[in-house]
Length: 267
Image 1 (cartoon, helix red, strand yellow):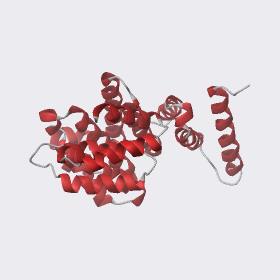
Image 2 (cartoon, one colour):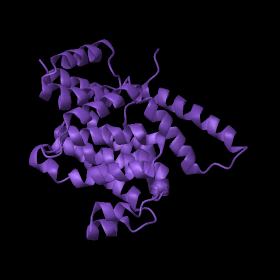
Image 3 (cartoon, rainbow, N blue to C red):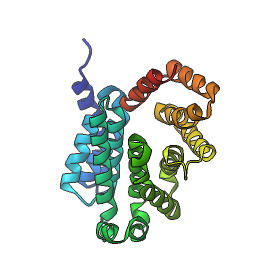
């Protein structure tokens, strides 16, 4: 008899918990750090277990430690993934809105970011954000960029200053761990932004680098095809993307939905 989803998930959580427990005998490990480790393992297993378990664990950790940067940026990542996995447009926007909200909380941290954002705008507010909040900046940029893509048209122009400022601050802070996320956000900005900033060549280069860095992920390839190849008439790229997604499908919830939408869109 096969194991159920929750039995597999329980086994995964127990296994990770035992590893963390062994490590904690040598080094002090906080309960929140344990939750983060388990959430990472569950997120990596989302192709089988879905996104809800990881988001639930992180939400509980966020309740216990609302100022923890490691929890917050992962929660932004989870909400972005949930948005991309949603078949319903309303649910899609709802999850992305949650990602943006948590990103602002993550950026606020110990600084006056939110207050300065209201008074002076993104560039001034982001000047208060230090390297320790770098993941918040990177994933915040992607959250806003994905929202920009979903809104499209004139509505997208409203979010251009936010995405641009977040990308620039993320690059100024540095940090190789999330550089692919920043490239992704900038590629979306230049590929989906209004005509005055649209740069298909630069967007194509950035999104292609992201697709190469994340070879098993469908969404970067779909972004490249939809935002760059289709508008420029690059039929070879569109056909190649269709074939790649069909022959080597991305089994994650967000990857499966990206593939479904693209195959329904392209002839």
